[in-house]
Length: 60
Image (cartoon, rainbow, N blue to C red; front, side, top):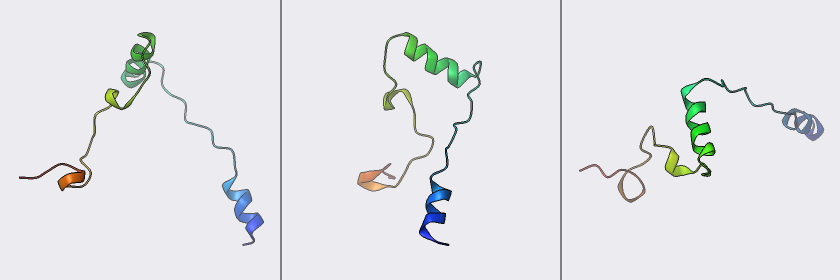
């Protein structure tokens, strides 16, 4: 492949998947936005600890 071919492949327009208006996650986001807050990391909880020791969860 030539560099031009790679550029054509990686410069395609990407469309996000549509959200479901009545899903619980979307309602939670709307509730935060309606209160006047900006969405930040404090509104999310980790689903899996990353690493261990001083950079992740310490296992004792």
